[in-house]
Length: 309
Figure 1 (tube, rainbow, N blue to C red):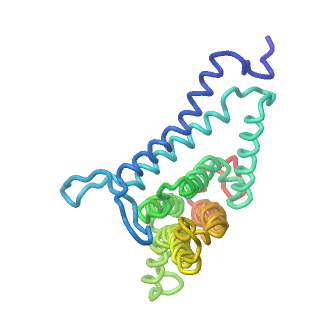
Figure 2: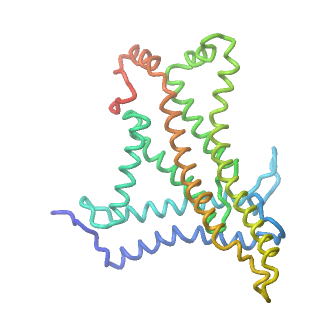
Figure 3: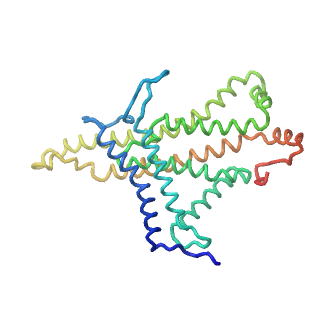
C-alpha cells in the first residue's frame, strides 16, 4: 500500500483537530488579556509598571507570588506548542500542505544555525535552540497586544540564563572536575578569583542583556507617548471642541517606535540570546581533557565536527 501524498483536509476530523489547535494558540492569550483588564488598577500619568501580581501567599522563606510574567510565560508556551502541533498536523512523506513546507523550512534553518555555530557534534541541540528563540520572541511580541512581556521581568530571563549555565557547566565537567578546578588557577593562581567571577558573570550578563533591552524599549516608548500627549494638548489647545483634547501628535510616531522597540528589538534579542547560548555551550567543552578520559576508557575520540560520537 502506498501512503497518501496529501492528508484529507476536507474531512470533519481533520478540521476539528485544526480548530482545537487554533483554539490552543488563541485562548491562552485571550485569557491573559482578560486577566490584564480585570486586575489592572486605574492610574494617571505615564503607565510604567512591572508585572501585575494575581495571587500571593506566605511561604517559609519568602512570600510566594503568581505574577503576570509567570502566567504570560505559560500562555506563550501553550500557544507556541499549539502552533507547532498545527504546523505538523497532517505530515506526509511528500509535503502536501503549505504549513508543512513552513515547518520543514523552520527545522532546516534551525539545524543550519546550530551546525554553523556549534558544530556537527551538537546537531541534536537544534530543537532546544529553536525552543529558546521561539519562547523569547513570542514572549516579547505579546506586548503588541497590550500584555506584559515576560522578557521584561528579570526573574524570567534569569531563569533561562541559569538553565543555560547548568548546561555550560555540564560540558565543562566533561574533562573532569579536577581539571576544571585546576583551570580556575590558570595562568597563575592570582587569577583564580577573576576566573570564578567570569564563570558567574555568564548567566548574569545573559539575563540582564535580554531583560534590559526589552524593558528599556518599553519605558522609552511609554515616555515618548506621554510626552506627545502633553505636547499635543499644549500646541493644539486652540482647536474647537473635542479636537483640542485628542492626542493628535501621538498618531503615527508611536507605531513606528513600536516596530523597532517591540518587533525588531524583541526578535533581535531572542536571536542574540540563542547565539550566546550556542557559543557558550560549544566553547565550554574541554576537548583535549575529554579525549584523554575517553582514551583511558578505550572510547573513540570526539571533536566539535564529529556528530557520530
